[in-house]
Length: 366
Image 1 (cartoon, one colour):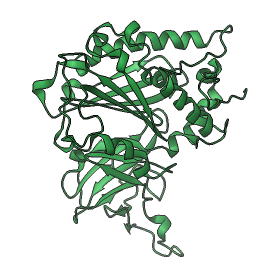
Image 2: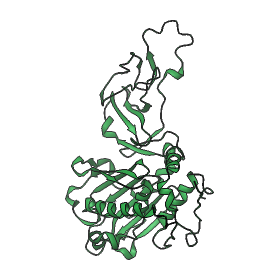
Image 3: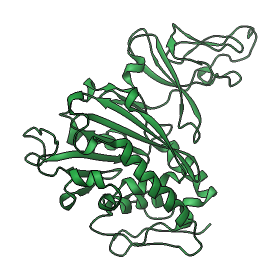
Image 4: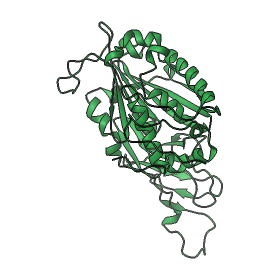
């Protein structure tokens, strides 16, 4: 496996080498160096709305495959726990529901909803039992608005991670948004997860790939803003197209904002439109296979079908075509590295620098 580095000066930098998107060893390294340390959006609070609700899930199924469990106890406290029994490793909770305690059906070990060991049959005489090791491990989690994030080993505080989003959109009625399963779906993309992110992180391709979207966005004023573990693309509406009614304290007050496209390292997109939020989670399934989940949360149905957020399925399918073709192209023996547009590819350059840092190929970003 070769080395790579991304220069800090975008004017001099070269893009990721093509082999990065196809290397199995690097893909496995990304699992441990990036995804186990990342904050992942896993659920919304409606799934554990009342005391005694439990919600088992798999963290990044097909990639990390870590069995976890969200619980809300009788005191209304929420926990994120390992869903693996501390006796012989069976899954403790198998289905969502309401439970007063957690009981492994393999050998009957029981836990409280905060993960504390309670009882184990036939264990009389076991020396030094029980200990804290018999409790279900707790996993770091945070709640922002109505969204629950977890991390096995966070690379930064959640406050630092989410701050750019909070500072820009906290005035929106996010908690009032309702998940709409009829407008949500998964897409299977035959490409590396990072290549999918590359495409999302620039508006450079909009005039060439998304004809309908280009009609509602003012491409000339489309811009990107960079933060430590996040970046934002601001879509400006063409005259007469749907846009936000911004409050006076917004840094964008007076502008016709059609959409805020937030990307949070490594694989989360939060797309804010006047009607609500399209959450996109990029889930790696292999070196050249990715599942992208589009989760739709609506707070104003009257505004759906208008502006930049009107035809998300069409835009996604258009993106899939070029991303899958690019995956074929970066396998070429004749392709190595490209260059960045300083005007249009700041987000891609930022992402590549983070990848190089977390994969141990360059100095930390300052």
